Image (cartoon, rainbow, N blue to C red; front, side):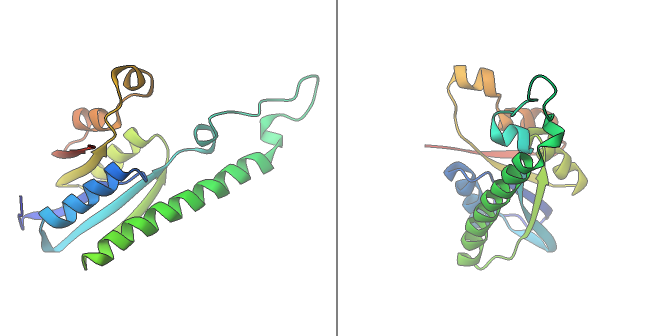
Length: 162
């Protein structure tokens, strides 16, 4: 699929091996215009989603969640460390292939934010991995790749896991 007409390619990475496989595919298979950019995008979940729980208010007049900033700060700090590790790994893959890329990190719901960033960057192509969840897990968690395929305004290449 080598082509030199692409000016903006977004590769979404989430730390899964499937997303890194998608990055490798993009680096090996695509050719951008000389003024083009390959953007490695990571979407960091909001602290509440990342924690998978909420400490909730303390009953009988105790402090509310808004009054417990240490909890949110700890989750945000942990998320930053995860994001740094993911981007470091992705940049190592790019460096090994002698390809310079841009990185972008946004916070929010991955499926929505991937589509928003692709639109903002006027991406010619979105590349992403697919974890291949089973039907039950996909029913509860949803499929980010399926959402993007049906919502983004550019072609999408999904690299499936093995």
